[in-house]
Image (cartoon, rainbow, N blue to C red):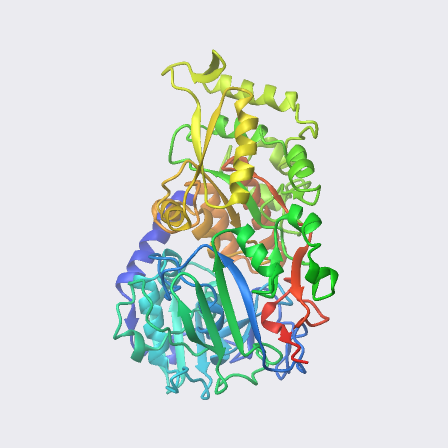
Length: 608
């Protein structure tokens, strides 16, 4: 069933991409809708009603002014954040380019008016219509027009990152409605998220970018409609954004209490250690921390003892996401699931957490841990079982019964039971130990692979894991490369294994195709780093996009979670139980937190 559906869907996408029509269609041909609204929610109703004044996690009394510097590691060679080529500078999408709608961070997935003052969809979501705000302007003063919206879709679909093509090729035709209205009609695949995806489409000015080569990475000054403009930059070293005092949307409800700081700079450092030393000396003022060793032992420098720096923790209602050591199943030996399962057994989390991380982490056992979407510790519901019924064998029986259970490690480091299970799995896969080396019996080749890393933290963890697998004769070679080479190899899947993180929200959707969909496996630049091509995953993504109730949606996501975990595509590692941030005294944050934890866009600077 899923394979036929997949073929039909692919054909529709191709047809839609080739036959996108810019034409008027009779209003009577479109299904009716409740009318234009101020917001759209993926499921249910928006939290904030029409006429709301600001988001609850923003302080409307926050003063404007001041400057802040953030730290970044690595480098950048582009000011174009929309293409695969090059590494773009941090902050462009957030500060310079806006979308038609803005996300509210107090709820799973709801969008409110930004460049578009209203949004309209019918009950079946076969189309979406936006009416542009007449005040909307680009930073050069030119009004945002329907032409800009259409041009943005064309450029991003045809020359942007692969996920843009996947999303925007679902637009079958476009209808202009007066001077400020635009309606997107979709191919009939039932995707209920696509109207929201269009709402989040970044809008770029046609009159600027039609004179540029959009597919080229470079340092041409970006022009957008957002609250900031690029003031200056040093290629690969720093970029500074200046608040646009003539910004058209400052008093929109979605912006009140946000974008308070006059100048935002990102300074790049060669590695995390250099970055931390810079933070201690005040070169930059806000540091999200992800190293528990550093968080627990290194924040005792003079500025902190003198009260100039403070440590804050933020609770988040979001799923944990997935940080993992990823197997590239396009390559041997990872084409064999038994090899992957054996290597999963050999990661001793309990020892790593105690000896490297001060016991600060929690083992990740689901792609959606800490939320209702995760399958860990839950028996599959009848609805999940019916969704998975056409795909016999796609979910392991134990994962169907209670979700994935991580191997229980030994804090002492002995871990004999897991090594015995790994050895048995490899024996079943045709391996045996010869003179201390795990060897494939048929070819005589040793079991060896490379772990590609780009940071000291990754290197330390990779070396630790390399010693763990060495105990049964497996050779894991750790190779540290510069960030540019790492990004290039990752984009082209030129690796055996890498560490990677996937963010998870309470409303996963179309991005899941970009993460794990079969079509993404062979497209450079996607996040399907493991090369998964599993019909059951594709089917669950399709079902996720057409789910009409939250109950149905949760069942589908849990089912997909079980399929992903059954595929043994990666070693799930660990996550922080809360967000850790260190701030210099002048940086102030609202008392009320968002569902997503801290939002730096709501911070302000104490200038006293």
